[in-house]
Image (tube, rainbow, N blue to C red; front, side):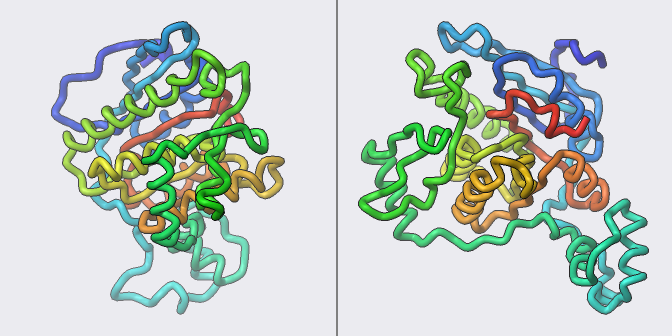
Length: 317
């Protein structure tokens, strides 16, 4: 199908992964990633909906769906045979042989090879947020004390809650005054909240249709993750089970100039969702490689692109 085509989805009984994009324009540079069959399948169908946000003519919401079923296996499939030797018992040469057969990097110490071959090298380890601090967040939101403001170049939630550090204070979203999505600018306050409600309704409908117990959520160019936190937290409170989150953000490269900020945000995000498997990738190429190497990992059921006006560098075209 041509990249510029807008057609209605096929009327078939097969359920399809859902992709939602928010941007200031129809971003063709973002299309190469979904075309990867290892991630979400092939045969894209595009439906464009202009945002009903008053005087925001350049704001678009795109829903993308693709053909191809997602596998039932949501957890990372370890490559070791239950009846065979464990990975840690294999020689370095044997480990490298297995890695090479899966198209994975073969350099590093034995512990790194085992980690890479087990499929967990991109898994983010984290600790849970204490219950008392979770209640403080809920209380601030419920009582209208959760005010977003400009801080350290991002629109962020309060730094303190009742004199105690907010466990989500490092999350953030775009603060560019020229961005049609900046909620701090007059007339744009409701663009993001409306988009959030739209995403929630679409994903709930999608999850009900496919009847899965746990969705795999993928977010592209996620930055400081405030929108993703809002969306996933809301979905869980609505009863939607999300088993995995795949985060793709070039700031996860330690040499990136925004690395410190986005890594702090990621740490808080992962701690809030401590019971969820969360994988972080500094580029889409590594995500595609990982999914291809471990086919039983499955495919993303929901792919969201938000706060990623230019995604070309992320997609490693």
